[in-house]
Image (cartoon, rainbow, N blue to C red; front, side):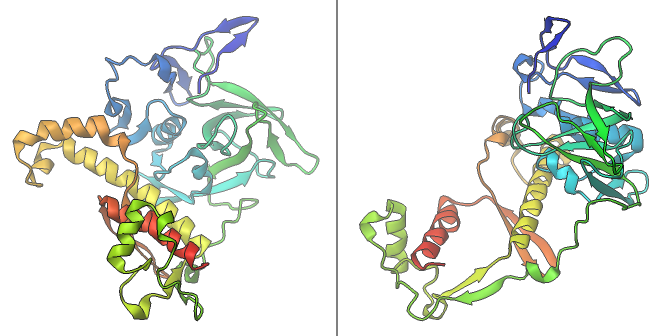
Length: 366
């Protein structure tokens, strides 16, 4: 996000990408993330944007989550799980100490909570408006009765005034019942609340443990006569669907006549767990692949001819973000979500999973 700022009637242009804006408490540097001004020679590919400290991946330069993760690492020696979006931090239940690998509890408090924010906690914005799709995260550095000070990246890109150790201030007020509410400076955005590392769950959000039974898939069957016997209006089908119908002898998911009316249902809770697992595992696989390609000894184990290594690495650098889909194979049951493998699928597999099954359900009124 690029925002020009007006101070005393003077419009300040955003500082160039990678410019040091100032230092947050703990001597943590905060940088400009005005991507439009990034130097292509200094940052020729996406790998150049990856941020590491002590070999640990912090995120991408200089996104909001990268600063939150880096600040926690440098000041508290802790790191939180990979998350797809900034607002997902609000739903994390723990972070890991890198000193002894212990899991430390995280508690989330809604904006307006009786438990006030405190320096070092993470302030979370909901997705939408100014923070469309991603949400936002900042670190609270000071708390007053009428305002808080925060440090953040990827909002304003201006060098801080001399002696300033925060990105901006947000107005706040304490209600009659003692609740603390922080005002969002954007009309189209909203603050979810704050996340504190503490054992005390008083006034924290209650994220009830998932009922394990909700992870079980439920076998169902079409009612008698419900199976359309694979006779949709063929001339309305796409060419690939017509090929599928010709091969299967109808719009069926199996050639086994005993199973043609059988299907499985999944709860919304199970879908949510799979979404979370898919996002986290995808990031882990991408990081693992990057690590292997960077390490000759590891890459050697995969048996690729050394002649191909430069081309593999170049392809990875150029195309790793062009990925559209992938298929993770999970076992889902009351025992949890277990990953079997990550597949690089053919077009026919994607068509069956993403198109045929949906059309089959539509034709059968499922």
